[in-house]
Length: 210
Image 1 (cartoon, helix red, strand yellow):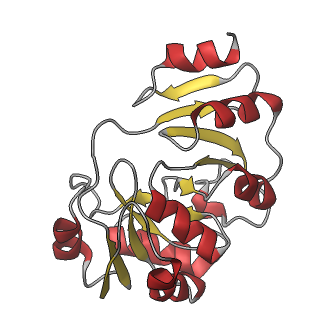
Image 2 (cartoon, helix red, strand yellow):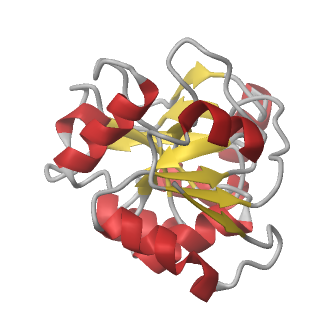
Image 3 (tube, helix red, strand yellow):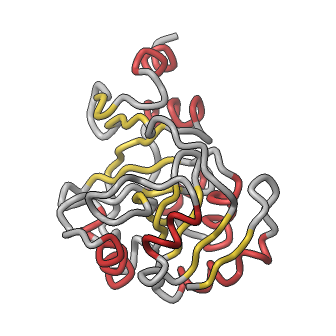
């Protein structure tokens, strides 16, 4: 495992080069987000997705959430957002709101756990966004931990748990932790709350119906 020390507030794109190379080669990278550390891989590469499940020691029965650099990247790779989804994206991204949207056909089926819907968000963490921008793709962001174990916010804990199972660890210091992202299914009308997390459902409703 290669460990990269990165400035959390102002990441130098050049310092992420080894992580970008790993993603493009089908590898697995541990990256910081605005909640916890996650495992990043190319969701359009079946072998890379398989390596994420193997790293966690988990079967492929649960969907993998994605993170993106910005709304434009989401729409370029996953498809245009509906008016409802666009309103929520503009209201809460970057931030802890995951939107369940229809998955494009070329996305690896295991990413959606066969549902053909995928959760995506733009995290409020400069390093995660910079990696997506440098890779020119959305990436997976499932929690960086062994299946059944607590999610991890500290890079030392990630290294201890997964060091032999991943290619690169982007060390930007401890993540904030706290509540997970709120998940809203915007693939149906009206939108449906899947999980209330860091953003209250009332805030979501207020955004949609000010």
